View 1 (cartoon, rainbow, N blue to C red):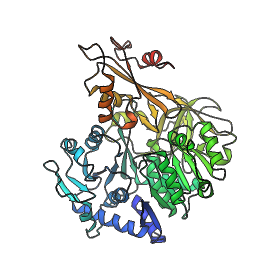
View 2: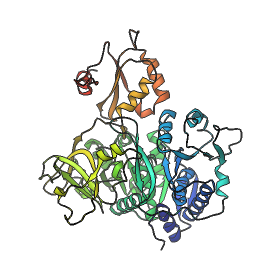
View 3: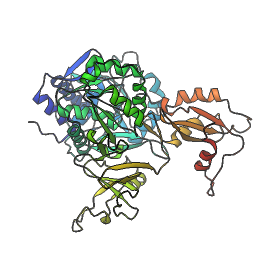
View 4: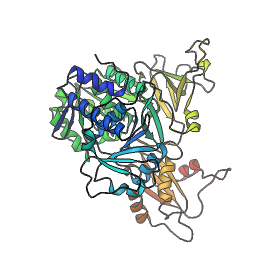
Length: 532
């Protein structure tokens, strides 16, 4: 059997076992494992022929489709690093990502290219743009070459650059509590071990049909591919606009496994489901925040024979914990225990383990801990630290320090070892399954020129987890803020999930702390009342 040390080996192993089995479904089209591997090998050769060097970055700005998957695995096979870019991002965010990690090759579509032209001109390391369809009549900035995806698929297969499992294979961008999104660097080992671990506890098998409803730029979204391919299952790529689209796909494809975030689950429970879905849905899984108990109860009523998996994780270490289905009745508010081949610790500030039910920071160790943030030593040092000796999990005679990821999340562990989430130490806004940086929202608002000062806050919302409220002041020389104009500009500059649901206009200056910075806590205390 093919060894699986590298990401693309996972696909090779599945193709070696069952080359004619369906790997992907997209609309009415299907792609078998053998055919998918063939396309990956040809695209990898094409990328190398373009002069792509070991470890260079391949940006992928596409909706979920065959070319998206082939580009990810093709970059891996070429010895490069793929950077999946959420297709709902705007040029402002896309430009930051491409410049931040120095994207050398961009794979996109003719429909998406025109909106990116100005942005691409500001990406100095970009050399090639690959279009999924005929590029005739389209142009790119000077110094950038335009290529047809089909042309690269005609490249004669050749070996990619030599890499090993500790080398980077992907950069997933996630928002931080301050500043712009930061790129989490994942190794081949991170992605492979994570996929195997999740497939193990979900008990994925070759006859599974997994619905990929989450963006592939999310760790949980991409893991639908790695868990599915590990088992030789079929993965259905879905770009849904409405929750009803998910229901239709579940019925049409007889889906056996669905992973989603709480806001989507809430919407799905409000729809009428055909009874037939309960006959084939083997499990449903939650990630990206705590699922409301009412929603969980409704799902279990809809799918009484389906196993519920409640999961917790962070992009910086792929996945941390899951609650076994048999424990859901006993402790539905728990985030469970560590997933296979990983360890989760609850530590005090001095690094020593917390006692039962004592709050502490969740710290994760093991092969899922990522390689840090791309080109950001300061933020990497804040999150990724040597495992303290006081944790008591390594013998002191081992000289090389082990790096662990310190989540910043406060949890407690009960006497039986089950974990419970308490809160986040940072100021992240969790909305629609996304972790949103307030600063990034504020930058988008400031760029409109329609406000003086601005603070973005998260307000509890039953459907979204949190909704975004922007507290703003009029620009200099103005008496008020044109709220409608501001919202229109926000929709043009920000992804849908970052657009504020509410604009609160104040006159004068916003409260400041002793250091002269805007006092977020004071502003939140004043503004986020039920009647706001």
